[in-house]
Image 1 (cartoon, rainbow, N blue to C red):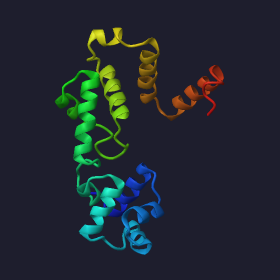
Image 2: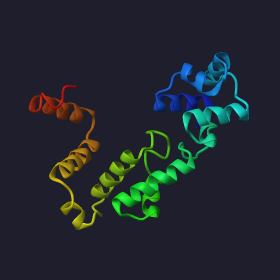
Image 3: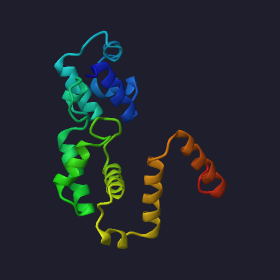
Amino acid sequence: MDGLSNRLIKAMKIRGMKQADLVRATGINKGALSCYIKGTYEPKQKNIHLLAKALKVNEAWLMGYETPMEQENEIDSIIKAVANKLNMSESAIRKRYNNSIFNDGTYELTEHGLENYIISDRIYNEDLEADYYENMSKEDSLILIIGTALSNMNYEELKKAEHLLRKSFPNKFPF
């Protein structure tokens, strides 16, 4: 089980927040917040609530419990939106979400991210309906194919793919 300090650091990183941002958002003094981050002092429930609210995370997750990082109402609204967009049941979307990289807080849950994850998952598991491809633009289907291929590559293969993209499309990939 992750401790509060690890979860606090993780949430700050995912949300792109610094200590100063949290001090401003919560009103918790800098010294106390520093102690929470170092793990030398555990915050009282009131401050856990303030931190969770500022970081837009589930309080139980922040305290180290095995629960989704995102707040439940946010998860529900994202699942509903993705289900409507992909014409799938909410229960099917929730099942995939529960087994995803978003559920454990590895990545921030967004509608676009969950949608892409589910589309890639469906392609990988070959359970897409045949007419789904017919309604997809060539560019979108190419992006999905490339995304699926990239997700299955190791580090060395990704470096080779990056090199090929740079060489083939120097104006499109200036990274």
